[in-house]
Image (cartoon, rainbow, N blue to C red; front, side, top):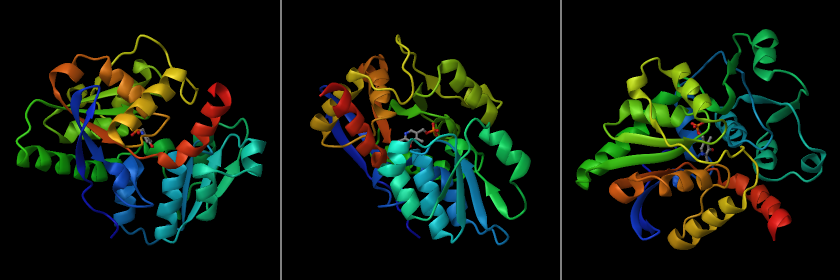
Length: 291
Ligand SMILES: *Cc1c(COP(=O)(O)O)cnc(C)c1O
């Protein structure tokens, strides 16, 4: 087993004490929230399954984590994408490169609705289909373990008025955390607006009592786009805490947190969800654009 309880660090951000759950340190290869979400598939045996099928972007954190999972379980991985830029094909980097090295088949299908295509043509009893970003009910298995680690830590350290903060893509991690924790979970929507995220929550749980609190932003940010203020806040956190966070989700996560009254009033545990392998290409893009 490659799994252990991830540490919680006490640090300061803008003169406020903040706790960080270091899921980036879970394991050298299988870490972050994708490791939590895919833990069910790591721990269970699927004797008939020969291949994992999924889809998303060619630089997705989920692509890399699935490639590690497939390797550990001795399965094939077919990962469908709409587009791989010719630059990336010629200069493999980050998640894309590491996934190829793990033996992933990254298959380009331009203009297809990938979910529909896979469901219609590719599934049989030898394949395991994992929806984009690990938006699956099995994710609760590993996220519940994360929730249990947090509960135990809060009890042992007698921490009250605790709020949990993490930025969301599909919202799967935030939702299953809220379902399994007595503390309020705060999040912000990184890939669509709050309405999109609310829909994702309903897709996984009809009961809106277990839905996390979505922090609203004044400005609309587009996923994967570069914003100077994102790089600045990412750099500020890095300098202040000595911890490197991811550049896709965490800048908005810290922005949303710092702009909310929770940051002043409550004890905050921020979940570091990994994703650092993607930073290499993000930093290069930022340097090309701004520096
Ligand atoms: C995938 C990912 C997220 C989003 O997780 P969801 O469960 O889809 O909301 C956030 N941060 C990082 C670093 C990720 O890799």
